[in-house]
Structure formats: structure tokens, C-alpha cells
Image 1 (cartoon, rainbow, N blue to C red):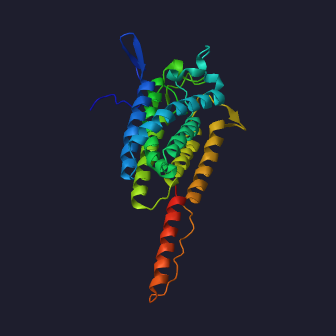
Image 2: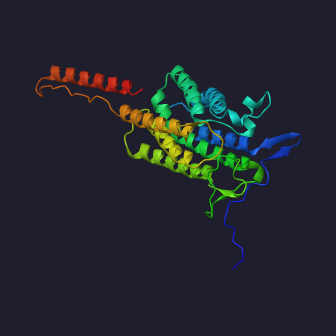
Image 3: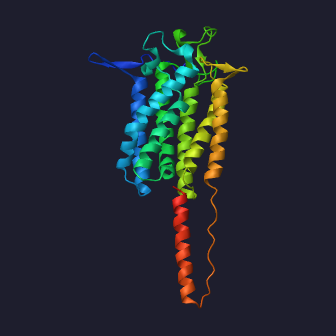
Length: 298
């Protein structure tokens, strides 16, 4: 048996690689991979719902740039101390710094616009994309490992993350291993994605339901995560700003899910069995009621 057993996650020796004069950051590469996987997954799910898979590419063409812009704006507003001190610092995506809620808001707005313009159901499309977004976020968090960011309090747990001295916050120079909160989020995101897929296959989930659970479930985890993280953040009443955002979004997501699943019951018309004309009229009314119910779910 070896005398020394590794009892922590080592910090990465590099954060990118060169292709000729071009330097590829692992952080950006992980986002590209995550977005690609999200498109592939959503195409399969949208096709299974009877939708045109080509719509997914059109939505991504608009929603991805909008999401990145929204995520960066959110980051710049909520963590101004982490903006690089250059004129281009507010745009420096490659150095890390994307606020997920800003990305969701801007990306969702652009996506809803494109889906609505195509004449498809925005609620059904949202249900199709929800698990795919979680997979994309999980892959993106791998980039945080290479940037040595988004870690938590010092820990001596076997899975503690080694952080180079230059990347440790002020006051933590004596600590070498920290809670790998990005890893916890990866595990949670993938587990929640699997649950949403299972739920969609085994329960009758109405439009927007899975997306609402995505918002609630991810935000609920962030409440826990924000209690561990020690990276730079704006604080209010002693708590990180994102703690309050996560709490509000969790409540909004749960209320949204409850509302989306609440639909008026279809009242079946009464028709005498021995009256053919009234029975036919009743069937017509029932068909209209079913059509109205389907339209209300869009």
C-alpha cells in the first residue's frame, strides 16, 4: 500500500492551450461544449414532441449571444470588484464572470421571441430545453475548475480543492484546500436534469412546468452554495446578494410551477343517448372544449 494517498483535488497546472498564436481558454471551451450538448439534447426532445428540430438552431442563434450578454451584465453589476482593471474589463468573458440569472433572463427573452415568431408553443419548447440547460451549466462549471474560482470555505475533506496562493481571497493565505462548490453544482445540475427527464416521461407535465422546476431547483441549490462560497460578492445584511436572488427565484419557480399545472377542468356536455342530433352537438362541443384546452397550454 502506498505511503501517501492523495487526499485533495489538485489545482490545474494550466488554464488553456495554444493553437498557433491563438490561446484557447478551457473556461470558454467548456461553454462551447456545453452549449453544443444543449442544442443536441433539445433537438432530440423537441423532435419527440412533434416539433421541427431546425427551430432549435434558430433559437440558439439568438438566445446564446443574448444569454452571454445578459450573464456578463449581471456579473458586472453584482460583482464590480472582480472586473479586470482595463477599459475592456467589463467584456472579459474569457477571464471568468457570468451571472447565471442574467443569462437565463436574457436568453429566455430572446428564445421566447423566436419560438413565438415561428408559431410554436413557447411552453412546450421551454419544457424541452430545461434539462439541456442544466447539462450546459454543469459542463460550464468545469471551466471554473481551470480558472480556480467559485470555491467555498477552507476544508480538510478528502475532496477539498487545492487553490494556488495567488487565487486565494484575502485572509485565506494559510489555507490550501477549499470546498469545491463548482463540483457540487455539477453533480446537482446533472441529477436535476435526469429528474426532469424522468418526470416528463412519467407524469403529465403541462407547458412551462419543467422549466419552472428548473428555475426553482437550480435556485434552491444556489441558496446552499451561496452559504459556502467565499469569492468576491456584494453583501446585504451580512449575506451575499446572490443568496437573496436565489431565494426569490426559488419561490418564483415553485409558484410558477403550481400556476402552470392549474387548468380548468373540461366539463363534458350531457346528451341523451337516444337523441342523435343532440349527441352530435355534444360531441362538437366536446371537440371545441378540447381544442380550447390545447390552445390554452401554448
